[in-house]
Length: 204
Ligand code: UP5
Ligand code: MG
Image (cartoon, rainbow, N blue to C red; front, side):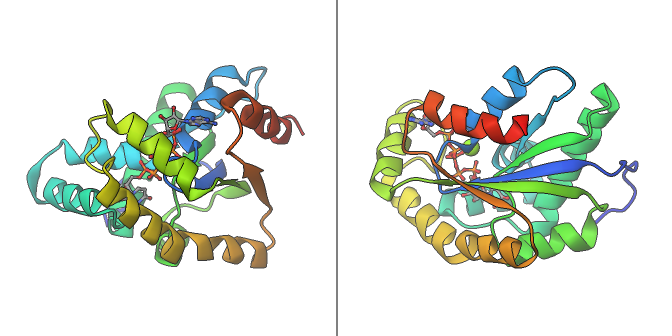
């Protein structure tokens, strides 16, 4: 892990979690676009950052590619570094210090890497989108028709669910033990209904 990155001030973060296709990206985009009045949050999707990093090629690109296509987790050090670079870029551009971290952490090991290798940031709360698997499968297969994502096929979708159950679900208990608020949101509803629930939490 390189420690030569320019430093960041203490930031506020909201971890946005939930199964594959739960609507993390959709809701974070809406929050980023619509919250105003000095309450601006920048959306950073760990998956998007990894997919961008993959394009840089090389051995790292191959490794990220293989993990995503298999529905498995990319090593934490790589993911943390991508997120930190994303935070630094946004801070340098707009002095942003409030981030919606979408799709991370998704394992205890991810969280440990966050605590051990990143600057200290304030976890404001955690959003946990809950949605039945059959609804998620429908959404992902529909998106898969034109998403170009190597993991939007039924075989990889099954593996993503398995990884989510085994690695990501237990991290919710950890947050609760640490006294970090976890807001569970029913994301099987329409986009706008889900957004209405989420918005309330950011207006408090
Ligand atoms: N949609 C959204 N909300 C809807 C609603 N309320 N009603 C009806 N339709 C709705 O939404 C998915 C689809 O559903 C879209 O077509 C949308 O229009 C529709 P989206 O907002 O994209 O959901 P999201 O939860 O973001 O789904 P995504 O597929 O991005 O979730 P994943 O968690 O699977 O994907 P991510 O990009 O985060 O990770 C991909 C892979 O990267 C992982 O499997 C892993 O291999 C790797 N990874 C890591 O290793 N570590 C990380 O920290 C992060 C990723
Ligand atoms: Mg997403």
